[in-house]
Amino acid sequence: MKVLITGATGVVGKGLIEHLVQKQVQIHFLTTRKNQLQSIKNAKGFYWNPANDQIDTSCFLGVDRIIHLAGATVSKRWTKSYKALIHSSRIRSTQLLLKGLQSCKGEHQVTQLVSASAIGIYPSDFDKVVTEEDTVEPTTFMQKVVFDWEKEVAAFQAEGLNVAKIRIGLVLSKQGGVLGTLKIPVYFGLGAAFGNGKQGQSWIHLEDLVGIFSKALSDQWEGVFNAVAPHPVTQSQLMAALSRALKRPYFLPSIPSFLIKLGAGEMSDLVLDSHWVSVQKVLDSGFAFHYPTLEEAMDNLLRP
Ligand SMILES: NC(=O)c1ccc[n+]([C@@H]2O[C@H](COP(=O)([O-])OP(=O)(O)OC[C@H]3O[C@@H](n4cnc5c(N)ncnc54)[C@H](OP(=O)(O)O)[C@@H]3O)[C@@H](O)[C@H]2O)c1
Image (tube, rainbow, N blue to C red; front, side):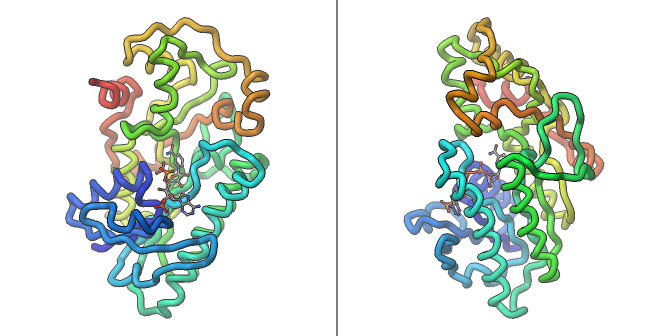
């Protein structure tokens, strides 16, 4: 099998390529940075630039499936122009990918698109457990971004492709990301929950997320799938588990929401929103998690 991956140089992409290469899958990847074209061992890089509609369409040669992960990080300060980039990097890249595929005029052999999406599509709720069946009526910035992204991704169905959308939770990995950011204050004994600390944190270990993408390919998944661990925790529990794993005290009161909103504005949604997300559909598919509980994940990720 040959797979084309966008956003391959990111945290999820790198983990996924390592896994797929071991399974003898051949990899093509698209990058917006010319200096990254040769950066991934055992994978062939192609240049694209969704901002100006540029794509090297030879990336589709011999490709059976596409995995679409590209998008500007949401962890940088949400200025007006950066918010536009968070949105456009996902929408324009999806549109360009489709345009590129269409330019092959039926000569391609791609049968499936597996796209990243995010649990940020669901409304924040402190009690309700959400499933893939829930209807989404976006109101916040993040919900709108993910909603629009999924809508663009669905357009590949008209090209005859199976389309799977993987709604990813908070990814925990050794490669920095959210854990890298949270680790710093905790390491100095300054770990504290955000807001009332009761927000649902539907997290997932990178290795399990990679396994889910891999199963989506091997089983030709179609439709929406939540990718989170079976045992979500509250924000306070997450910070406490992190402190325990790093053998640091956890005693500080949580940081009040109004202070976080004052400092971070709309971006505070990222830490104050609550998502309790069901992964029953993925479990029903027969997927077995390596790290179903936070303790197991932390132990693996933070053990020296
Ligand atoms: N990590 C999480 O907790 C999480 C949670 C929910 C959803 N997701 C989604 O899953 C996907 C992969 O996540 P990740 O953590 O691997 O992200 P990441 O580390 O930030 O990597 C994303 C990749 O997207 C590409 N990219 C960045 N800006 C771009 C732009 N303006 N136009 C086109 N491509 C651009 C980059 O590749 P090049 O520089 O090589 O082009 C980058 O390596 C993302 O779309 C993310 O939103 C992640």
